[in-house]
Length: 142
Image 1 (cartoon, helix red, strand yellow):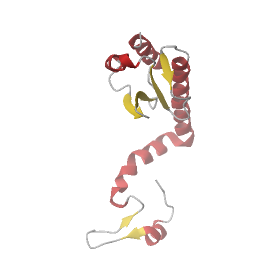
Image 2 (cartoon, helix red, strand yellow; image 1 turned 90 degrees about the vertical axis):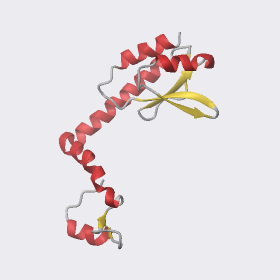
Image 3 (tube, helix red, strand yellow; image 1 turned 90 degrees about the horizontal axis):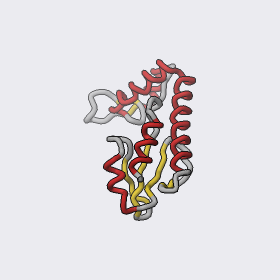
Image 4 (tube, helix red, strand yellow; image 1 turned 180 degrees about the vertical axis):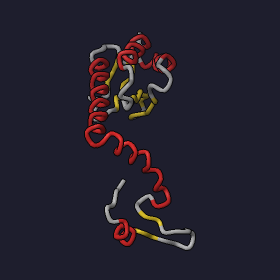
């Protein structure tokens, strides 16, 4: 998202038009400009420090989840998270489906990496009960 102080200059610099458009589009997304409204509202409500605190909280949740999973001998962690994404799987591939069925709905997606199935968890909810999630995972891999 880009905010312009001088909209007239911005329109002149990056507008484009075509016979199929009622009005010229401005910006990279053109006719999808309203998609930035939630981001703008968040920035205005929380400010830079609020956004930074939320990102750090989510990263902290990912690091905590990875630390616990990495210390569990029944679980294989792909790598230490560099973002808010933790990728893991049970060491016993035979129980993957059972584990998937026992995880809370929406807690993880499944991905294939080099022909192997893994769970992908995104710790983007700073209000998530990470301890409840960890407990669910540990019960599922038993």
